Image (cartoon, rainbow, N blue to C red; front, side, top):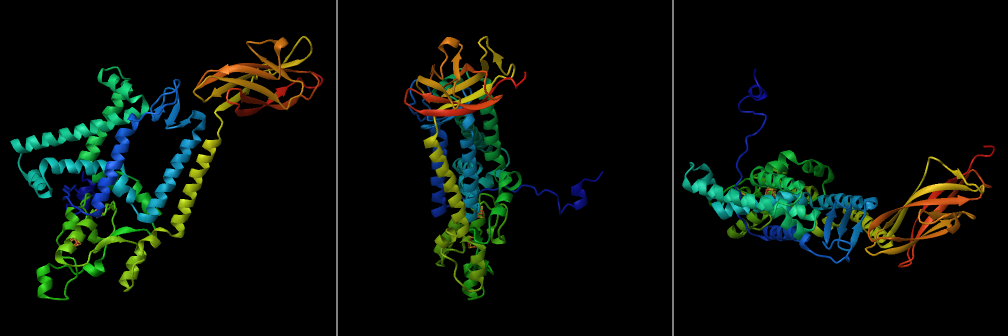
Length: 485
Ligand code: SF4
Ligand code: SF4
């Protein structure tokens, strides 16, 4: 049976066979910027788990830690408990709006500079140059038959890939446990199986995605380029070839022979040779362009060498393209960056950030939840009064032991006691001692006179006697028998 490729014909296959990409080394402003971003992002990734932060004896001293076993997220002096997950949601919303902001201002800058796929691919491409040499040497070696040199170089290169990939996975697990302890446990075979499995999976994915799939991840697998296209508009900066200035293409020699017949592009192909995704930006905007701007560096250096103005390839908006084609001048970059849309995004992003900072500063470190026993709803005591039972969870989110008072509010005549007290010692204020960084469960018995409405809503307030903090309070219901029962 004929497959789809047969039906489409040999010249028009469904999938294009991958052409090898061997980007040439380039220097210039954007290359230096990429180096800086790579150094910063990789340093943050590898160093962060080793930073220490003193939180006292009852909490871990790792500055950034996702403590899954104890269900805590630590980030320097911020500690997030499971019931405060909305802060993590807030951070994710900020990250989303941040991407909207960056994309609407400078197109796919995230893809070009900071995406892990880009950073690791860039790193692996430097490994290629280190082992095989620059572009031409890489192409020669790729075409050469297998022999001792090729086998040695391939083994050397893949070993370095594997080393980097292993440390990528190795660094990741350090975010989930105390890094020094986990390192010792890992190498002595005492770490949890999930740690070895995670390192194995991340080593394999980094090795394959960064070492071999590279630009194919961006072009075929990642949904982000499609989403970004919807976020950009005619005022977003994208890497653009000034075809109205560069075409028709012709070498310097031809241009000298026929003055005025050719544009500024000398068809040297340097912009294509340095492109990490192997595309030709002169064919117009395309999904393979991650806007890393290395082609700008390459073309600018060619223009300098032949004494023509820089900027044949440049960051330009679609509006600027139309303006320049009509003989006008592009808007200043600052004006392009600060426009209503980006200012609105920035306003929303900052508002969420400030709101989170404000609530983090205001949040109480003493929290409580109260649950009313449903069966029985109430008990009539021998003196005729009515008792309701509750399960109270008191969270002491500080790393010190604290004395806490549970206070009955808005319920005159009601008193309470716990399993350590009795009806005789009942009061509208119960004191307990809560261990650091724990949730203490307390059975609370509340008693009130039989006379009164069938349902009374009241509050139980937690007050920290150590530190004098007014803690959380919870509204609950007190039930009495219905009249006539
Ligand atoms: S680097 Fe510049 S001059 Fe050379 S081919 Fe590309 S656009 Fe033309
Ligand atoms: S075309 Fe230029 S900006 Fe786009 S990916 Fe290639 S080098 Fe980077």
